Image 1 (cartoon, rainbow, N blue to C red):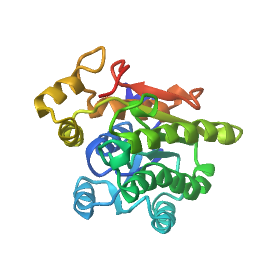
Image 2 (cartoon, rainbow, N blue to C red):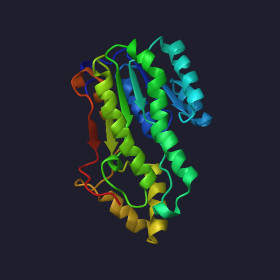
Image 3 (cartoon, rainbow, N blue to C red):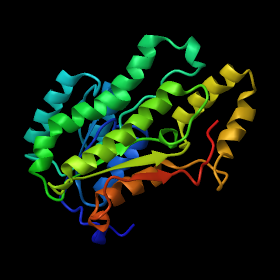
Length: 259
């Protein structure tokens, strides 16, 4: 992507869970586009690694509203305002038929995947209102539009993200704050490997067979790469997407069924 036409030079960006995995790819893509980037993560080790890599990085649990209020102050001190919020933090949640699921683990999935996005938007909105061409990018999932047997907490939470995104796009549109979501398919990396292993255990099938299903569930017959998600996040926040609002953008190789 041509960094010169994105309009992100000097823009102030926060990426939650941005010190590792998909979040780090997103943070690196924004930095490459000339943005000033802060990342957060619940894991102090990866936060320190992000600092070593030159990012402003803070330890934060987005499911804890008090910590998010502290994060908002840290962003204010570092940047004086905010132009782009990327709500990337999320967890896979438990795998199993709904009758077997632990209620507390179900709640934890929503605490991170939905309530965490709400807390970040609520407490960072005053800074976004001071921002330049402000936008919010929420990470949902292909599971946010398709059912997925054995993954009801995750799927339900990601559907909720779409509802939150579309509603906020209406609420904040008059203030020229755009809100969009990204719906990744199965993304290559350690996280999908653990998901596949849990699904194989639930089904009583070999990991290799379930892995083949995941690799072949899109029309392109391959996993999505983290860079694909990062590129979409940068595009949605850029001046190239100035009239893109309230959308759930699929980056899934045309996935029509989830396993």
